[in-house]
Length: 290
Image (cartoon, rainbow, N blue to C red; front, side):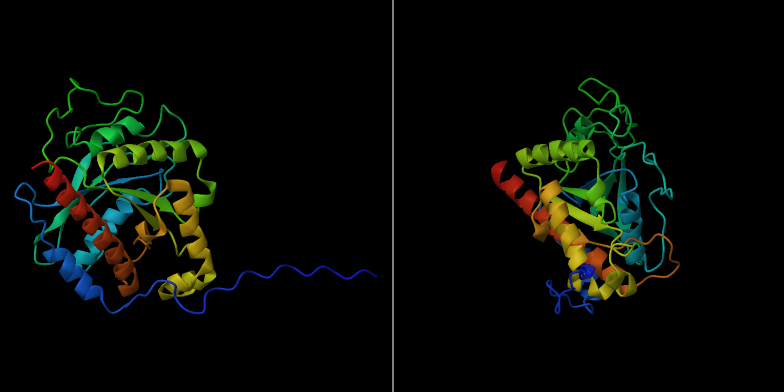
């Protein structure tokens, strides 16, 4: 009788974390983000633009950030569970306030999700318009006809505060491998335009504690010991462009009533790097436009 083939064993996780994390630094991160100085006379806060496929968790990330700073679960941006279509229809700015009602030095803009069909979801040209500050707050997107000069809602002479200072792609860890090539191509178009404008591009990888990795689902603090999560981050880097140092795994608040320090820490870590990259862009912009 021939020998029976043994099933391949799953690749073991790392013995030690491949990113060093001090899980007790949550309050320090919160304080640093609250007190960050932009050192620019025209700016009160940096503008962060979130984009990505429908259902990736863009609005949920905004709500999760607001929840962390408020110390309780909040719903600021509209979310819809298991939505196949984008629930974000207009260009809207979301400021974040803390427990002391202080408005923090960053603002989020959420846009319609990218979809496979060209006549559905946001047109990549409208994301580029937003990067350049040409989209008026409250503008309703038309998937078929992107905004152009002369249209209502087009800002002809945007200020530095109207412009985007960091582009963030939001993608789910659970489906990055299956993301449609058409959506990836649209995201690549936007990334190239951001690079042409000198705008930094980062990735927030959501849904890391779904059914991606049993180790992380059991204990979120093990996220940087997980080989599966690192593989998903490498795949995000390969498919979307940014290097690993610009990719941050997070777990949004979507079903909990109470906050979790580990989730908070991952959200704040990602946000601090986004704000720092945006601040670097503003410094560079100021030097070249003096």
